[in-house]
Length: 146
Length: 116
Image 1: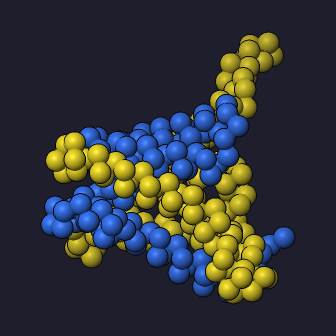
Image 2: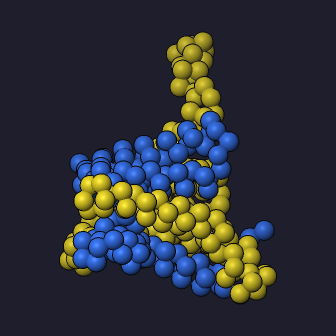
Image 3: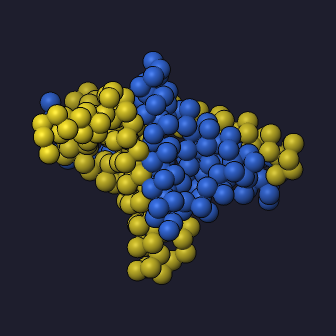
């Protein structure tokens, strides 16, 4: 293969824009997180012989544990800045936001530090989730009959 | 096969989030909030349930399933207690994730120290 042809090939396969690269990376990592979730569900339901619904609860707890633990060790911040939405959108992002808030405000004390600030970032998710679920629930109850 | 579906669904949701993050001025906090509201909205017409059947864990891992589980838990109690069930059953299904996040982050914050 001569040099020009090689250059053309390289140009063809190099992502033209950073956005494309980040998008593909988010797709790949996020997809792998989904596969991991499905694998954990199958694993738990097979080995503990529990229904899939209970296994999915175990799966969510495992992923939250992984997110908190890796954030505590200091790896997860680098992983998030690498994969971005691939790790922010899965439930690990929720765990990461709570864990990093707890770590950051640790030095201000248990009550005024951790207690007051643990939901600083994750609180928006819970608040908007509850508000939207309430109004959509009302809509579903009155318009569509439950 | 369900692994492929899980990969495609979770990957697509994350790709949409990344497109929003790159092309608008929204922060990750905005995007996760938007996705929770979208998940709750999709559950009004039982659309998200078909996603869960199709993609399994792939549909339960993204934060959209948080909104879906909130409204789902509320609807389960609404069947027994009427409209007041919206208040009592909202956190029935999501409490595992929230409680686990609180417990783990509190205990790990006592053990670990920030790296920088």
